[in-house]
Amino acid sequence: MSDPKDLKRLIQKKNRLRLIMGTVIVALYLGFALGYGPLQQLFASKMGDSLIPFGLVYFVGLIFGFIALELVYLKLVKRYDPDKGEVSHYAE
Amino acid sequence: MLNKLIALVGLGALPQLTLAAGGAIEGEIERQAVNPTAIAMFVVFVCITLFISYWASKRTNTSAEFYTAGGGISGLQNGAAIAGDFMSAASFLGITALIYATGVDGLTLALAAFAGWPMMLLLLSERVRNLGKVTFTDVVALRLEQTKTRIIAVLGSVSVVVMYLIAQMVGAGKLIELLFGLPYEVAVIIVAVLVMAYVAFGGMLATTWVQIVKALLLLTGITIIGVLVMNNVGFDFNQLLQQAVDKHPRGGDILSNGVWIDDPIQILTLLISMMFGTLGLPHILMRLFTVPDMEESRRSAFYASVFIGYFFLLLIIGGFGTIVYVMGNPEYTDAAGKLLGGGNMAAIHLSHAVGGDLLMGFMSAVAFATILAVVAGLTVAGSAAISHDLYAEVLCKGKPDPDKEIRLTRIVTLVLGLLAVGLGIIFQEQNVAVIATLPMVVAASVNLPILLLSLYWSKLTTRGAVAGAVVGFVSAVGLIIIGPKVWVDIIGFEKALFPYDYPALFTMPAAFIAIWYFSISDNSQRGQVDRDCFEALVLRSETGRQ
View: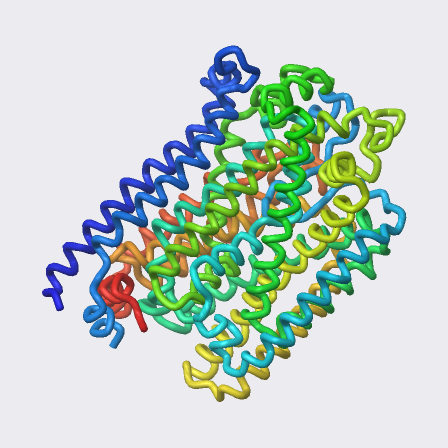
């Protein structure tokens, strides 16, 4: 079992990962509100020759992007998970 | 704002939408003729779910099994159940109707309903699962003074559950009246009786499987609609948009934001309320305790995102499909262009337009099943708050008689069912949009700040948590009362004192500031104990329990 200090360091790293990814998600999400304000023209602009507006692409991009970010988090966070011995120890 | 929109669209058919994905159906209801296909399909669903409840009742003997299905649900199953709990009839019928009336503006509500899930994965899925046993109150009370914290958290939970329940029951009554041609009171009683049967006998295990079945049916139905719509336009999405623009009275404007709401602050506060409100919903948080470990809890949140994201992506096709196949079609609209049965019928009419009686019957039955699944989840959360948090943990100091606790839980379930019928009938004439707004705003302003800071802030004290909960609750309810939905729509004043429908942009920071101030200024002995407990709590929250 690792030293509690090592465990705390892992937790700090995990928190940093959460903070960075959470900030990215909230920023991208709230960016959608700009489509109702200063970026209204951009959100209404069409993609190439199609009728598809940028706002729709942004919406679809956010859904796929957030799911992709979740996959990245699931992958990265495993590095900071405690081993089974630590789980048993702290569960007590 | 909505009146302005009705005038703009010129349809007179805009549903007075409930602005909550988890909310209810509202608007002018015209009772439809009895729909035998829909009723037959619904009876099949009820038989299957009652069999599930019977099966689950054989496996539900202890309070842990009742509240959390014994922690034996896998991440994939739990993700599907969460999606089943969260994708409500308002999401399916309401957002489709909003796209029908306004175009891409309807996507704002879809995004708002989806975006809480990545944050749930990052911030709560692991720590909440590792620290709690039955409710999120367990988590909050772990490092703070038990009795005060539990009472304040139970008030937050119960108020959210009851408000959500009222919105669902009123929505259920109206929706069933709309889809099946049954009287409102009969519809409300049917919902309550079925939910009482699921929950009282099968507990969380039955509720989970009812939600999974419902999620699969809803996703199947919306997929079939999506494929049929796309097939009719040669799987060319641009062609679908072109036909929608040609058909809609607003033409190309339906592809621009700002038809529904043109104020970015109104949109911002809606986005904040929905994202952070989702993170504070007790019946959703409770689902994190049904899995065996934190890895499965993470997977639950991820799979829920995938299912919910897929659902909202398909709603784009469904929404624009309603414009192409329903708008102006004399089979579904009257001479004035108004949708037969009311604005919320757009999705159901689309299912008939592309799939005939069979698909329409299927989708109507799914909409009913949707309400049952959501109300079942709320009932489990409400009974856990009373019998586990209040009775077992506060009154019995954490050492209840197990038999008495499980008996009480079942009695509370029945009482909640009766309460739901009573409230559903009492509130049937009320503005459901207000009732549906409250739980999201209260969850974001009361439950979430306490929960988040108890997990991540070392200086939180009991005094700060109590103060934050009071400030969050009072400001949320107060601003909604002086906001447009109550001050203007219900009381009848000309102008609201507070201009925004969803005040969480202001009330949530107010709660955080109150918690911060009353915690850092807390020099009591208890405050020091609360701070000292943080380190052990963090270690446990990241290593878990077995």
